[in-house]
Length: 156
Image (tube, rainbow, N blue to C red; front, side, top):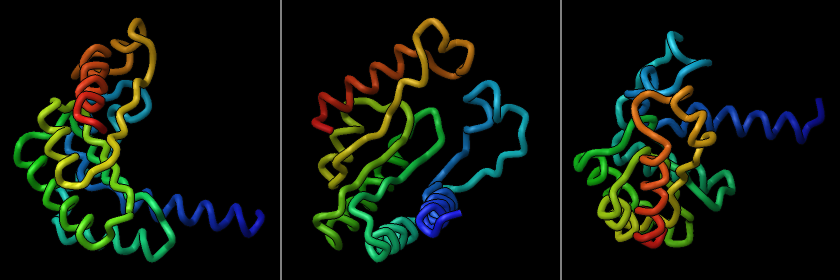
């Protein structure tokens, strides 16, 4: 294995271990692959832990820091918590790109995060509308599209 590939794998492993800020609902969201598996559940990291993650990302040369939660979607408490983290990180690193992946969101939730300093929301369509019920039981393909529309409307 080349030194460059070894470095890439080490960075990916570090990101995997340190970028999970919550995965409370992963067990019941996706069919196949992970269903029935013994998946550890993590509590939401504290604002200080999220800020420390950003510091480590910057120290390792990252231009973007992405905070990821595996959940159906955040509530008011999670949005407030993550907005506080975004604001603190933005205050410390004004040029660091802040990204979040949080599941289903309203336009107002996305606007709140944007006001706090978030610049991107990662929210992918995993498959076609027709096949979506085969892989997900907690929400629909249209729910995901609505989130994309909400995020766009919020300017993210």
